[in-house]
Image (cartoon, rainbow, N blue to C red; front, side, top):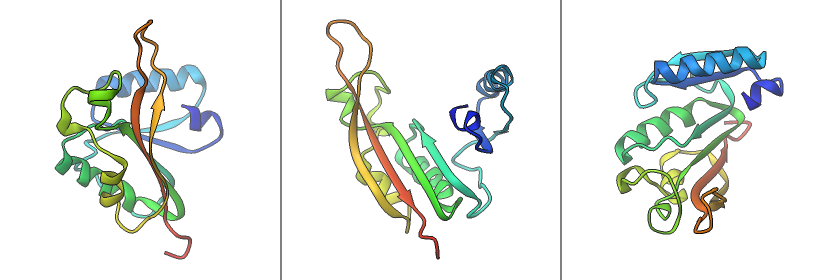
Length: 153
């Protein structure tokens, strides 16, 4: 929604028809048009080198499934375009707050960097995000990777 409100042409992908129905309603209420695709990120193959920006947000999958999804996402980035991956970091399980409780779906920035092929890494780090949880609240710890496909590639 945020990108669409700023004039981007947006394609959203999710495997849940319930989530997509809610997203369609929110988009309609926000007055934005978004193309919604019901598909599994592990098996769906987007058009190659077709998008200026591909975001993978909190897609918490086991490593073999995550590798497939990230390979598809990276391949969809056009020359000069950006891939942004954000998700709960493995450290979040022991030092952070919220997020999945299964270690096998958590990852590090290094995991992502190793899985996105030949894109140029612009940023790869752990970031802390405040979580509202009362007096004993701890920050959530996320893995963040921003990469770019070189313009001539």
